[in-house]
Length: 491
Image (tube, rainbow, N blue to C red; front, side, top):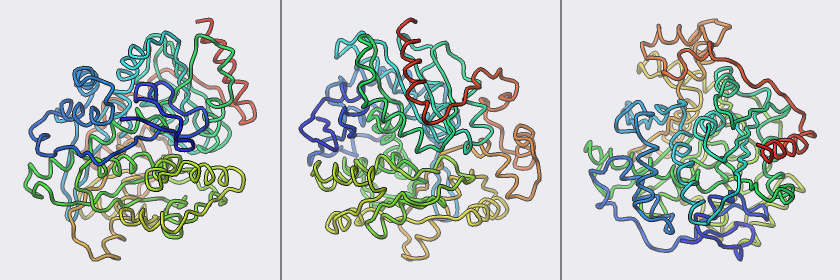
């Protein structure tokens, strides 16, 4: 399988090079050239999660041997995850909940970032690369810690994470600024996630790296195909679990509801469908930053709106990068995608051809959830269903309810639960009627009232040593990156 730039499909690489490069030099995202070949579902039954990951990832990364990927998967999906089956699927009244937060940093990003360093190491050997790797990562909350944890003290690899000064939860921030590892750095930015993401993309395509002959850039964000492909695996895992539990029969179509900001997680679901998983609908759930909901309803993507800081900060995004990949996968015209992205950059908006939207809307539905609706979901499901969820999952449940109400459809549905409620303990307690100002005291109180154990990685987080206190303005971002490159050169 080959990978092309979404903005210029004459730029074509294999998966190893796409992994290492992260972002195409023209600013496009490496996107798989899918053909009509499908994964045989019947060959996936009774596999362990590492074995399943090997089968799925091998389908997309054909320049890797299955043995190589299995080695990576076994190192990634081990005792770092609380559940021996790696994924956990629970059943509520009207839906199944795919709990993706039982990994080392209590967020779904662990599934991709636990394996990415191992895949990169294999890719380096394939491409005979000996350069130092400078990983630049923007985060709206969860990616940062998951990436810092995954790449800590990895040889010849240096990771720098940029996060918005205001917008991440106290727990998310504490996770990042106390990160261990001699090769990690964490920097707050006076701006929002979109500013952080724009800085990373600018640095990657600016040519600033050219003067450093032994260093190369890549990303741990979902703009890197190495982040996206491992996320496809848990869609298959959830489906196979439903079959095993006799909730569906093999071959039945199901729906997935995905809380979405940068559009990576839900795009993984689309790639799962394209590779053979019986997915009927993908429901895109947004918070008050509802740029995606408007897009799916109108065909117009318009980032010219007020940015809203919500209690679901990982979704506080106005430029959803991975939507670019979907556009290319549907229209197969990189010149058209390039025009859309240029329009977005220059004018803050673009409008997609009606024919393209008609194809997209055969699979996708979209709904958004207000702050009040989000809080109501958290409170109602805890009181009535004894189900404790974080704000992002609450947004997804809200979208699910709106979808069911609109369509009257009863097709089996899986909701992706992407973060532990303990990462937002203070916010969750507030919705339940408890006033508490200190985030770490909130962890203990939430455990007391819910009887759900605090994740091990969060339990003593307040006692961890703070290592990173730097805050920069957006205009100084490139200067800071250049200083980081000099630091890496001399390391």
